[in-house]
Image 1 (tube, rainbow, N blue to C red):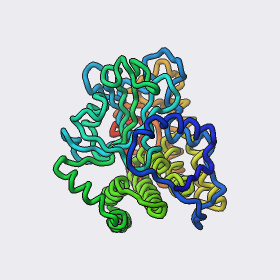
Image 2 (spheres, one colour; image 1 turned 120 degrees about the horizontal axis):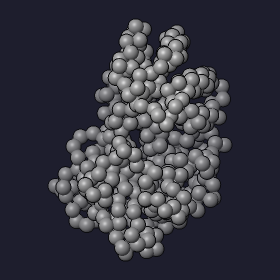
Image 3 (tube, rainbow, N blue to C red; image 1 turned 45 degrees about the vertical axis):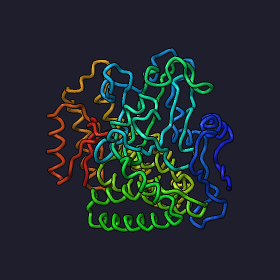
Image 4 (spheres, one colour; image 1 turned 90 degrees about the horizontal axis):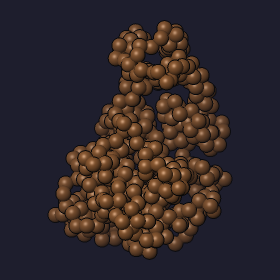
Length: 443
């Protein structure tokens, strides 16, 4: 088995090793790597810095060690979570919606997760480090801590969710030495890849013992990929998204016997995440575009970190979400990969103009932040700035404009009417299925 740590700082590797060494000794399944052979599509000079790697696994999500605040309190707002137990012992924050029904009782689930303790800045369990296959658990037989099982029972296929679990439904007063102290509140970031009925699990296991299972799965993936591409060309974006996601599910649960198979899997994962990011851009689902970028880095980072299209889509989505600092980072990485790409240069120029527009809007809407009322009507100065920018957008080559509003329905109607005068579409941007106060105007 070969190792490729190129571009990952030793300090971060040390954190990852410490975070997972206890669990690694106990895990079965495949461990995936990629070989060191040069690839004509890869520019080997590109690498991550420590801050970029930290972003993908959320080290900076956790509070400072020794913080005396309620565990993970900084992640919870009045509207972003659901109390699954009624006593706040299991809180759920939906990160990205899935599809289909929730997991039935006693089913087998295939999941990836990253698990944190509140007073540590590193995860204590990271399945992405234990091989890129999802971990398999049977609900109802005690394989999972109670709080995590309660959370997973609320999930649907493809969903990403965050669960904050109190000690009573986690590792209680004993903890799980040496990594988990007594009375620890635990946070799990969970991706539900798939679930299977007790009746179908034997067939699933039999199929996965087939020595040619990877080749057969890859044939199915390629077929779905081509079908999705055709739906995208026909502008049937919803159908394209469904087929891309089905192909992703097949790849996620596929096993690899050697480096060559894993490289093929990684290449297709990168293609699927990139194509999905473009679909979600078309749907003005900008938070999902960012999720595709994060997932791509977890599952196929060797190829994804050199994927100009993925990084461009990610950067554009961040710009439209008004996260200009992170947008610039992604676009600058894309520009390093393709310095002569005029589309990237143009997007960076749009970022600067959009930043100025947002700064003007923010000054008007939030100038008295302590007394701001979300339902208060916007001031006349706002409409002066907005009208000017809307006209500039209409005559430009950009395809989407986003603007932050208060939540007054009358102002939203005004925006819709102004957009319709230019024959433009209006979308309310959602995050994890919840409407935000950002509006997307699309040509």
